[in-house]
Length: 418
Ligand SMILES: Cc1cc2nc3c(=O)[nH]c(=O)nc-3n(C[C@H](O)[C@H](O)[C@H](O)COP(=O)(O)OP(=O)(O)OC[C@H]3O[C@@H](n4cnc5c(N)ncnc54)[C@H](O)[C@@H]3O)c2cc1C
Figure: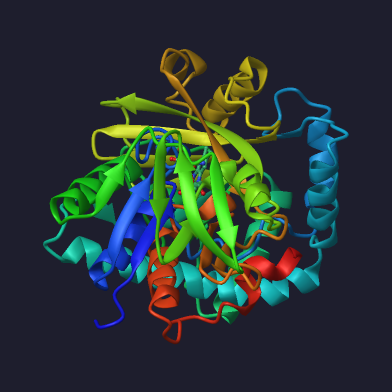
């Protein structure tokens, strides 16, 4: 392409690495910086699900009531640490404002389209000879134990049909039949055949190696602590003694976005939603189709010779420590659904914690800023950063190319809170 640019991508999680890939593929000169190691933050121990089924944002009706109930249970899957931080209060207010049926109606199509396009891009990656990784499209199984949850999941499945997402309501026996290697305790399930899964670390590591071999400059342990702007543009990013310049800058810093955004003088309301996972090596009983244990809000994903359990959402700032009570609650809930996994079986495994970059409306921030013309946001993916990694990268590159984007950016513009 003729309009070749120098692009600096700040942040090497799934979103940053996918952005670097599509920018490189479109002929740009790409530099990727990460304050730690590429792929070592939230993009590492997550459940690895690619989720067209998740077209209902976290900010949905019923969330506030559930959230308040959970606040008083130290073992519940959701918690917000009370705080007088004006940023958190403003975020919570925005979140509350979006917990309406109208918001679900307004966002289901963009969430469907982003996820479906990303799924196709993952498949393209998988089928190309560029990188070799495991991508499995066996769908996602929602499993529930109560009538209340069944009704809620069946309503979502009905909505899915209306917007063209396949969803099959199953009896307990039919759900069990999809999981021949594992005993399931459930009253039924919904299977979304178009969902998929991967091991995010395998994907990111291989993509990083591939990009480095192809001339993308990757600087790890390089934290951008300061930026310079002039004349409505970003001119420099500084990491210690190092100084970086570029034509376009991409901010893909996940849950760590707020401080950099402040330095840039833009408002990106992203708070950290901490979650935990444990991964069993060579599990005695392997799951076939990734599942969500609905009442417990736990995702269970088979990853080749591993089985990963992931869950909880704690809004407690940028603190990665493990709350043993809440983590214990996660472990305790597993055997209610999967009786072959008593707590002892799961307890002695290393716990991973990660910070989801949560936006108040459940939509990512992707696009240029009105205020700083050469700054592009690629953050705020909340519970879907892996799923939306490739589509975000593709959109970022289209934005840099100054071409018509594959999807409209109106609802995901980073200026929507400015
Ligand atoms: C328990 C759990 C389960 C999950 N399951 C799923 C799932 O099944 N499917 C799904 O789609 N999503 C899932 N998610 C969410 C998903 O993990 C995140 O949305 C995604 O990883 C966010 O990617 P990211 O690239 O934006 O952020 P990150 O992976 O956090 O990457 C941001 C990077 O920016 C770097 N950085 C930050 N600030 C700076 C700076 N100033 N200078 C340089 N570098 C900087 C950081 O070091 C980091 O590497 C889950 C999350 C959790 C916690």
